[in-house]
Image (cartoon, rainbow, N blue to C red; front, side):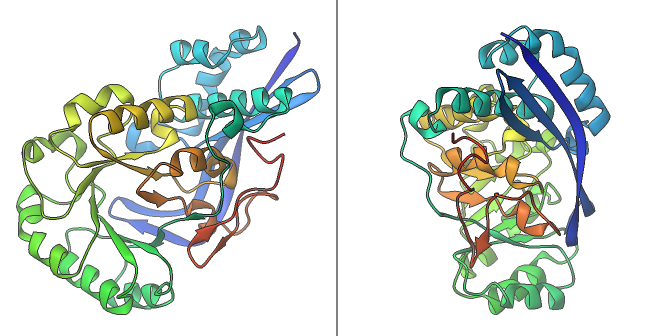
Length: 329
């Protein structure tokens, strides 16, 4: 066995700024991993996220620390032990999946024993802005199946109403990105019901969500920043009704599948999300999306240019990547 490892920083400018309650993103910085063996190359991508204490330099250092093990043949099970969950392990884990698939000449869905991936409806995000500008953005999305609204504490009622009035048809996720208090969660329940909002995502800070323990909301609440790995589910099952699974949090597809299993076993709903990233991040997430009630994988659609052969989005639906892009021979 002769393996080589390449890990590098890649950057993708956004076509328009992406605003949430924590700030504005104009560039998606990712870590790309390529693992080659016997002329076959497996690829993976991770998005280091400052919210979780990550950056590109740290992710590259974490990958470099396991270079010897990878070049000596470490598999996905070994990587779960050698690396903590996070963006670096995500890139490595997904590269190993892709390598395994291409060496076997079988699709990842065949290896997992699940149905082939088809076109996938995804949330289309209305970024945080003035209610007037959010309404304009929502009007352009009025025909898609699912919208996600980024809000904050400044005027969530106006933000949500503006989007819902402009797009009365789609299902809607409201995402405050940890910016609300529990008093606001309670106060806004009636509004969420009146406007037929389908899901409220991570309203409280992850380290201050105890108020949700035993709370019965009128609109289901999803854990995002609070939920990383399968071991988190036991502490979350009394606080949340849905778990948002992101491969950059779970440390790859291997961990994401384990988290989905744990969430379902606990009677919780499953959502699949992602960071702003290229299609190389989205392709493995589509495996989890196939078992999810909510899918939020529009990250590549925010980019000025995506990787060739990746997903395409039209009317809120993602196409499958081209054969050989990731997870297929």
